[in-house]
Length: 386
Image 1 (cartoon, helix red, strand yellow):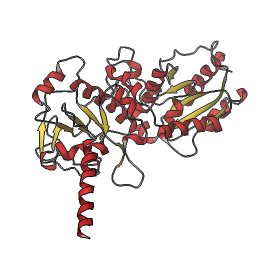
Image 2 (cartoon, helix red, strand yellow):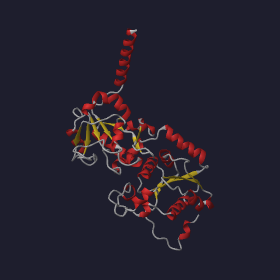
Image 3 (cartoon, one colour):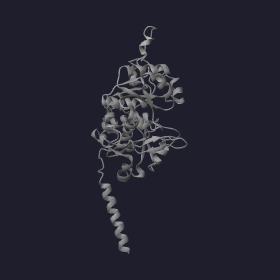
Image 4 (cartoon, one colour):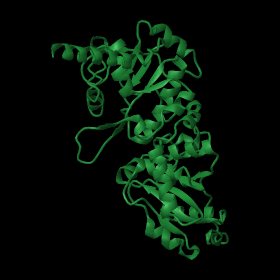
């Protein structure tokens, strides 16, 4: 009996060792980070930047889970990266692996608990170090993987723009992989909104089969035959309050996707941030007038979908208006990505995600209130009627 038990232990050790050896340790090192700013749209912007940054430093990017906040939950929820997206397409651009795989297979070999150092630009929070687990979602994120840190490393004045400077060389000189096999950032090593040079990386970010199938199923079984227009209405109370500051913040959130990174295409307006009902109906009619095969409108919204208002305004055209029965932001984004035309919000990073995906596919998009309309004369007002 003793022999059998020892034999079992030995075989288990062999299986575990072989399993770990399936993943060759990247001698160029790894980048970890907490996607701790904002909700999905912001995290997606940061992800593209982190992907470009990892490529520039030639380190494997560890794909963090998505941080989500659910009603009634006091702490953030960490959802594995591949719950929504495929991992393999990203490897066409650069080396990646999921956080779950890294912690299970790689961390025991090169990142033991006594060597876990948190990286930040300067002192964060209370105390003297990075305080990487102070606050929500910082603490819950690292707790998900039982990670504690034993020290802090301030990397300032280094920064993340590896496109216009010799920054990658400076990072690798100061933090060689042999001495620093893992660089674990307290936040994303990326700018927000996404840097212009990293926008094109969206082509490697592909929905997984589950999300894509749900989107296709809804379109096939709920929308009438013919084309459809997808629209995003950002109108929750938090957004209303944010838009009140639009004139003091010309580059608020994702505004550069419309206005440029130096406001070279104008300045943000309230109508871009929080369009009126008249603007929404007028722009929808304009799109429908230029697309005769449109049979329906699909609405994604964080609050008011305006189904009745839009439906009444378009009833002469017999256009039907739809939304998901229950909120599923990622499925909604996948649906918006498949629309014949998309109208989004210049300021919203959620809209920016849909716009980037459609750009990759060569599909047309436009934005509420952009470019700003000239005041309509009485003689031309009738042209917006169907």
